[in-house]
Amino acid sequence: MRARSRSEVASLSEAHALLGLSGPTAEPVLTAAFRAAVKAAHPSAPGGDAERFRKVIAAWRLIQSHDRPLALAGPTIRPPSPPVVTIGPMDALNGGHVAVRLAGRTLDVRLPKGMRSGEHLRLRGAGAGGADVYLPVLVRAADGLSVLGDDLFMDCPVPSRLLEDGGRLEIDTHAGPRSAWIVAGQAPLRLRLKGLGLPARGGRAPGHLFVALQPSEDIPSAAEDLLVRFTRVWTPDRLAA
Image (cartoon, rainbow, N blue to C red; front, side, top):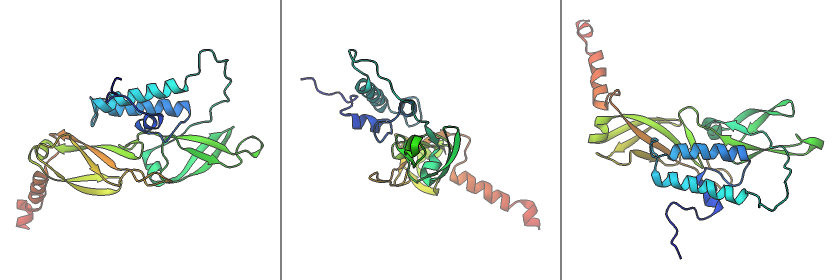
């Protein structure tokens, strides 16, 4: 029997997780989640990985093959897909309210904290005959953040010298500044800040924030920044005063 390659996906649950989904969902959400996941995992992307890229594609193929109807089956008439509620990472983090257009009406819907792509918002009594309506949610990248499953991803420009020599790094995150220590010659150039992903929700644990370090020659190192501040304070004009 042929051994399973590292690029293959063992189950549908693993396939959905690789696309950042909590389970089966509407086709528009599934397609958008695949596009976001394959773009983030591409080897040429910051923090991308060739093995994860192959797994994302394998996950998509597995889900597609599972959902494809049999060739001999009769035509299936599906009801219209419900509208997809698109939110940003900060909405998923903090919750709040979102405007939803449904059946010609605009509804103000409360958004709980920690919503993931593929989950559904329940609108009580909003359907025909007072039935409940369930709208799929899609979390799109915005504000320098992207979401995959429970985790957040962001880029952080870092002085090249700091990456080469190592040292302390201040990172501006959605939760405020966070400090991290860079090891000289560290590879891959990505840090994990535990617990700074999407908050716990239901049976889902809190996610993490992954920071891709981008070498930049335009950003001064901490020492250079300190020297600039010192020079501004101790100028000849200030000394004369």
